[in-house]
Image 1: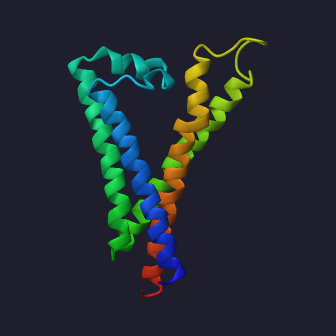
Image 2: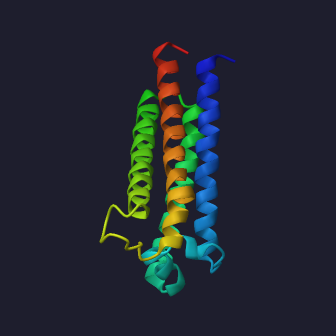
Length: 160
């Protein structure tokens, strides 16, 4: 197997695994699970505990979007469409940017850059989880998705 094809496969499978793991976690909370719910904090935690119809519909939409993200990662590896590969790479870079901005912003908040001196964030427990796990996972998922798309696009442009 060629290196470009190996990169596309490895990054595509990583992106799919992260997408499906994220979807499974969201689905668990959607169906009433509460383990680790306190690690997301804020309005997301309140909404997950709310259990209203609109909240459940929103949660279901999030799960569907994450499953679509995983399916996109798997589909692009078999694709012969440079448009799909380009779209996948763009979605990946946007997702990576989202994860990076949230991770850096959260880290700065934990360091006290925002707010009065010595004042800790309102939900430091959840913020630590975001900085150490939740937000970086979006970054890694996005980079993996982007690499998969770019690898496939490169392979197609070389006639492979």
